[in-house]
Image (cartoon, rainbow, N blue to C red):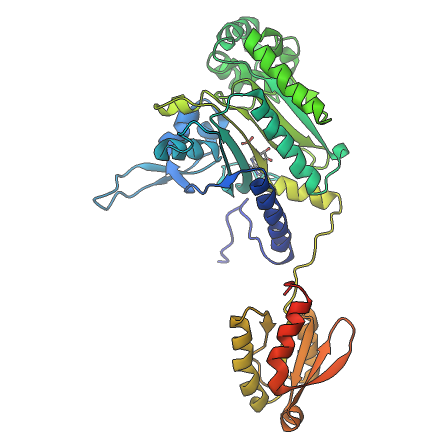
Length: 434
Ligand code: AMP
C-alpha cells in the first residue's frame, strides 16, 4: 500500500517553498518594522484553551483535531489536547501565563505558523494551513484598530497586490453594554421565522443569534436582509469608536466597504470587526480577518485586558499573488559547482569544497566520481551555479583549474593554490547573494 500525506495537508518544497520563504521573509521584516515581536506558542494546547474561546463556534464545535494525551508519566494527565485551529486563543493563554505586557504598556506580537481544522479540502481551504497573525494588547483605542487594518493593507500592497484586487470590509459588532439589547431584538425578529432557518441557525437562534447574519444558507440570507442591524443599534461609545476608526482609514486614503453582515464567527469580538476579501480567489475569497476582542481574556478567568488582532491566510495570499502573475525572485544557486574529473581531482576538491562551505561560501559538488564533463556541466546549470570549477588530470598537472562563469560562458585559468582566494573575491563581488 502506498502511504500518502493526510488529505488537505501539503508538502512544501522546491520553487513553491522558495516563494513561501520569500514572502515569509518580507512579512517578518514588515512586522518587525511596525514594532511587532514574534511569539511562538505550542501547536498543541489543552482543549480548555479553545473552549474558553466559545463552545458555540464552528471551529470549536466541529473542526478541532483532538489528541488524547496518554498520561502515562507521573507529570501528565490523560487529558484532551487540541491541534490549534487558530492562534489567538493560545496567544491570550500565553499572555496570561507570562504576564506579557503587564507593565500597562502596549504590546505588539505576531505569529506565523500552521493551523489545523477538520474541513472539506478544496482550493484555498486546507486541513493544515498557515496564518500570519498580529495581536496588539492593552490598547483600547480606535487608533489601535486602525493600525491593524492599515498594517494588513500595507502588507498586501507591499507584496504587490493592487487596490482593485481586494476589498476591506468593516463593521462594528458592538460591546458588552449595547449588545444584549440588540441580541434580544434580533432573537425577537428571527423567532417567528424559526422554522424557515437552517438547522444550524435554529440551534444558534438563542445562543448566538448574530451568527445567523453571516449564514450562507439562502433562506437565512433572505431573512437576514430585513433583520435589525448592529450598526444601527450602537451605543454612543461604540458609535464614536467606529467613526474614529473610519476617520483614521480615510486620513490614510484607504478605502473600505461597510458591511453590517460581518460578525466574524467568534462571539468574543467587540466593536471593530473586519475582513479582507479578494476577487482573485474564487469561492474562498477571504484573505484574512480580525477585530477587537476585549472580552476574550476575561473568559480565561484572570484579568481582563483590551486586545485587537487579525490573521492572514498564507495559502490565500500565495494564491492571490500567483493569480496576479507575480514573478518571484529565483532562489539563488550556489556560488560554484566543483566538477572533479578523476579520483585525484576529487581528492583535491572534496576537502576544499568542505572548507569553503564552512567559511560561508555556497559550493556544490557531486560525489559521483565516474561522470564526464558534459554531465557535470549540465548539473552545474541545473543547480544554477554562478561558476563551474573544473579540475581533471590535465589541470592537476598544470596546477590550474578552469573556472567558467556560467551566465557569460567566459573561462579563465586559476592557479589551484589561489582558488580559495579567488572564490572568496567572487563571493564578495556578488554581495552576499551566495
Ligand atoms: P479565520 O480565523 O477563520 O478568520 O481565518 C483567518 C484566515 O485564515 C481566513 O480569512 C483564511 O484566509 C485563512 N483560513 C482559514 N481557514 C482556512 C483553511 N481551512 N485553509 C486555508 N486557509 C484558511
